[in-house]
Length: 112
Length: 110
Image (cartoon, rainbow over all chains, first blue to last red; front, side):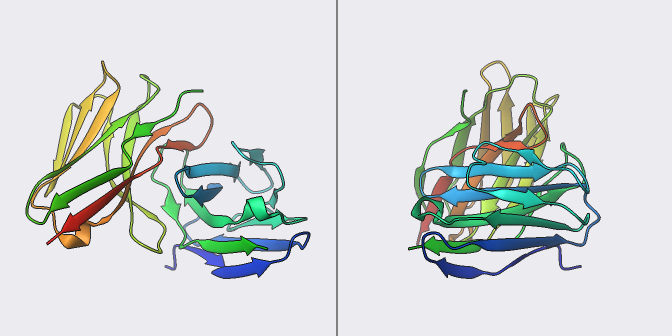
């Protein structure tokens, strides 16, 4: 099993550009999450999903959209990137809300 | 709202014990977690403790839970250079996710 994978690993965008980060898991998990990690801020939840076709806002959802069209995939979109979105983005999945979350390796995004 | 609190840095010598402390927010949390993040990688679950336990030991790791003070600690015995990483304390939040502390950077020196 690959676990949780993320693509791309690195990306540089110009302000105003758009992009989509892809997260995939092969563990048949219902719950999937997108976090961002910034120095001194820890992990902050952007959006999450409790099942295929469902999404919900987390702590810092502004400027991001998500979709969960297939159970194994959770997409994070930036419609118009801003320098404040420079961060490392982590995807995670879990069987339930009370179970261990498995994390992907991260995507390092720089917005110039 | 309240945050999960952790000290940001800890430096220890190889072979010594490390103790990382955390204060969580919800006294009704059923599970509390410790995650480890090595440089350039995602987080991995290190250990967890049920709220009905006071202590859990797993090889070099000892987790202590004080529910009255909402205090959680992680002790690493015989700390090695490979233990250098960021350690995150986490508790379930009122929704469907986890609240993470800001992480404690552990530096182990020879």
